[in-house]
Length: 291
Image 1 (spheres, rainbow, N blue to C red):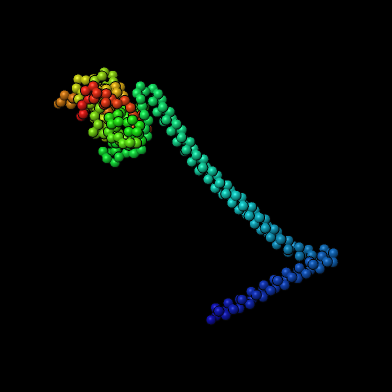
Image 2: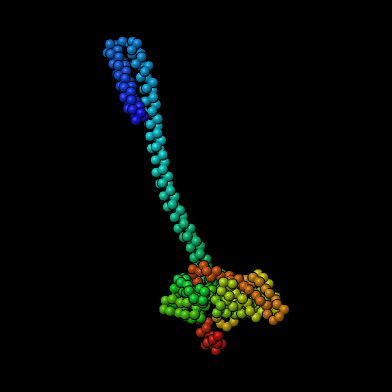
């Protein structure tokens, strides 16, 4: 109760002080106005100026500070808008740069394919890879050329880097190509430097294995393996890969040779199909037999 009474006593005293302050300010203002109307600059006018001057200075500084703060806010807002505009512009330019790079990469790739086709001695048909079958561990691809383009089963698919595989199924507009590194693939091959022959078997992600090369044969890491041209399927001299390891065991007659493919089968976009019907030619000569 005592605390409440004290609060009630403080409230009127505060109100009285406020009223007195307002009265003093009004009195000083009246004195100032009276002196101005009288055209005299007397003591009351001096006292009023001494009292009001600092207040006006504070008000002027506050107004200047608010004006400066407003200008800084507007500048900051303009800077943010400009940064947003530049960010959008930079994203647009980056997207365009990506398109230009892709276009340039396609141009270089197509230029390489065209140069390969021009220097080739075989009638080549360009085909785009449009799919990979989820069987045989992606060891077959689908290309957009078929019977309507004179493609036949047994024809060879190639790339500038080397042999890609062999056509195994033909539709009217599409064909299936068995890649050279498929486990079911076998190609007559030879070591380019000394013509030593063997059978190159597909080993999927491990590349190739060159079989039936005798222990005394001169085969070293880095040697180039090419098609031997035997069997009438692949022409002679098409690059297949390079020897990556050679193992000569005590037992057995043959070396164990692994070969890294020249062609990157995972990044194929275009292939060339050799339209030479070698299988038909060999069959007509009675020299071709099915494996």
